[in-house]
Length: 499
Ligand code: CTP
Ligand code: MN
Ligand code: MN
Image (cartoon, rainbow, N blue to C red; front, side):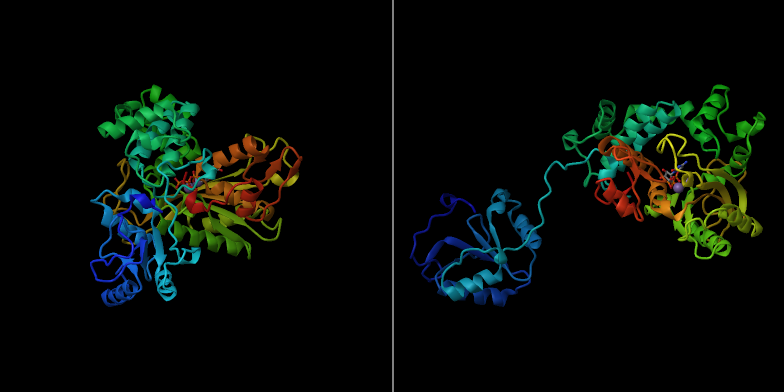
């Protein structure tokens, strides 16, 4: 309520300008016409005044009770904000009573303004505070695919990528975390002040952000993008099967792009040979439509080989991305163990159909490496994974529309098919929830899930299992929701894991 002394003082029991005697001067009522209509407003106004109520002609800061019919609290709030914009009197809004018409009709019936009760009040959504609280682990936040700050996150991710090329993991993660925090913000960052109290923003990131906010671009980012090393590393690591180490060695030997690899007769492994051969296609974004077409093909293969098998699209497409660099799948069967040995059969089926350009199957080695508990139980080392390249027949409207950027072997007319990178993973049913969570990403989201598990819960999370290191046992989960619960985290759906 606005303190009474601030209100216009009118003498009680004096006739107002409408000729009615005003009995309740402390209660200044304004009726919103919107949705009620002029005639009903006029009727209620006259009736109210005849009972001695003070009903205002227009909205002003002296109004204490706003009544409306069929409007939400937010609508009324918006209407008032609009009315008071010029007068700069918004401060008083928060102390106003925003009421349903029932308060007025009941008051009129009682011939006295009723004490406002909760049922009279219009519900308004809580006001967002100026500084949003952002949690520090990516797995505690909701990161939608489309956010408000790409003009900041893209430059920061260039610097992250460059740090990755320099094998500076700390710097890479620092820039990725900064970008990720900005992705979770509900609005555009306009001033440095908007970043107050946000976690994970280091000095370097803040300098870059400040420069972009003030000058429109960051010198460091622009220089990086233009640098020969960055461009060459991007082109060379863009070859499927080429990591940062090989790319860096080649760069120091003077090689700049995949054509240089061929021209100088570099020794390439099978994966890299396929990578060079399909370079243009593999650097062309895979569309959702193409992912669906491949999903159909793999689904057919999987069901033909093992009836009842389940195929799940994971990776970026499960998070709602429109394009991706590959298509990721997870395969399982409700009968534990039935999935064993199915990868070679699926691949043979696909090969027989002429759908495979390249494939390499590996036994999973997560548990022996950094991701999992020290000693894996015997049933945990049979994840099989296949990195492959599919041959996808193109429909007319798809082919030829996007010419390859690197211009290596792209024909002018475009072939009737394109190459697409596909990742296939087979998981036993008992680990399916963990595998789904692990293969859905994003990479930073996964990284923070594991970090959260270890640092905050004393647990060890992998794509196979969750191990409670204090109680020395594995935690079973048959859904992603259960895993979040085990970890003491609020469930974040795939579409909001785009950290
Ligand atoms: N992944 C993994 N182990 C790997 C490779 C990938 O666990 N050796 C997981 C990653 O953590 C990620 C998911 O698989 O969560 C998908 O990886 P990837 O296809 O590289 O990335 P996407 O998020 O799908 O992005 P894109 O659209 O570019 O493919
Ligand atoms: Mn992917
Ligand atoms: Mn992948």
